[in-house]
Amino acid sequence: MDDFKDSPTALVADVDCTAGGESLCSKHEVGGYPTIKYGDPAELKDYNGGRSYDDLKKFASENLGPTCGPGENLGLCDAKTKAKIEGFVAMSLDKLEGKIRKATKDFEVELPIMKKALAYVNKN
Image 1 (cartoon, rainbow, N blue to C red):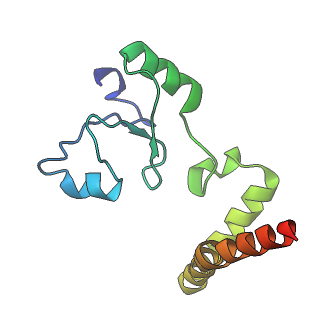
Image 2 (image 1 turned 45 degrees about the horizontal axis):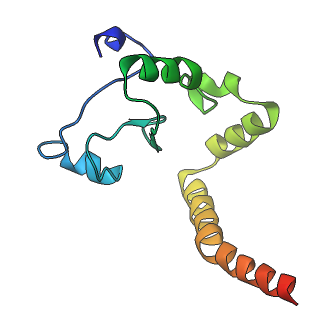
Image 3 (image 1 turned 90 degrees about the vertical axis):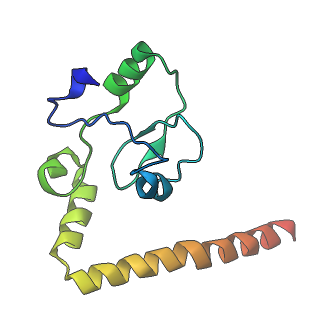
């Protein structure tokens, strides 16, 4: 971890899920130990690769780094994504939260119904 202690873009940390880190581990669905997660802190992904230092270093150098997003990383986005982000950032908080609620409902409620309808249509 010392290799990354002064990095402006990377955080390598360990969390004790049995002590002060319980809420963080619960939030990110850590169920077994050791667990390695990577990515955007708001949307961590499970790492399933090798566990040696060389394996982890190789994975990090090939897969991790700044990604497209609002703020200082907007320049990493393609034109279409950049325009979408700029539109979202320009919205009021209430409007953006409403769009998120609608997208969540569409995904969680409407999509399963559409898949069932598609399966039914394909059968007949």
